Image (cartoon, rainbow, N blue to C red; front, side):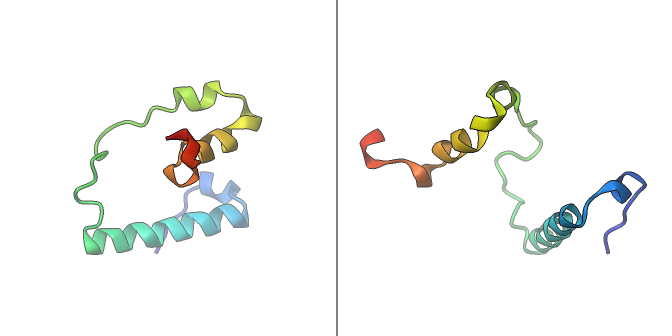
Amino acid sequence: MTKYNAQDAKLTDSERLVESAVDRWMREAEKTKELQNNPFKGKTLDFDDYFKSPQELRAGYRSLKMPVYYHPSLN
């Protein structure tokens, strides 16, 4: 069961829903050892470039960086 602290009391219902889903996924991943060989384990995430880009363009940039969205002409 998820434990909430005073800061969590400020979360909206949708934020709690997302946290609950993430908590369930993490518990399942721990059971199946899905994350045991994660190459990023223990490494810090670098968000400097992300936050340097204009907020209105971030979703587009993020989509373009995903291999699923590469147009064949970009290869």
